[in-house]
Length: 282
Image (cartoon, rainbow, N blue to C red):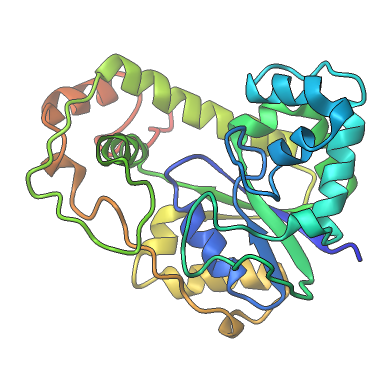
């Protein structure tokens, strides 16, 4: 049975795991993690799908090396893989191997989902041009999740790298944590985020879509209204799903964490951003 397809089109550190788990808690939705992440070793990942097929060995090597796919039958394997995810093949059951959480589906989980989706990072979409074609062919619905305060994305990434914790259900004190940011790398990274998501949105512009922000999704006064927009988009009742128990990993203003905050703000303003990393429209 082929389910309807959707993706969460986003960038890293933008709340996509939180949104994915909330959607996945609905009985009519199965929402996977980053299926096209090269180092995702879950049985449902594209990497595992290629690895398990003898004639796909060269394609698997190219995928792991993040190279442009040239292997024979690569498009065939990609099309077969997406079809298997949407048709509920045995390997496509959600696993807990990538982001363990009690909210994720346990091994052996089965459901009669009407919708099947996954987190789709914009850079992974650019690396797989044939995937874009498949998404369009299937009239895939697109939930665009953006984070407006780009400095928060970068700071969150650096905190996660420092603590080696990317998602958690337990809060951790950041009282003594200070990070110093390389402003040149910061500006380059923010430009990549802005341009990458813009290009991905343009490529999928003809598909049904809804756009939400991380700030709307996590603010107490707009959270429920925002998640309802997502369920309404999929024509489902939002009351059938419960909020996941993930905890924000950076729970204090970035100004209190960034050691060279004034230098960072100056660099941002010189490059077309405000102090929070929002793009200043000209």
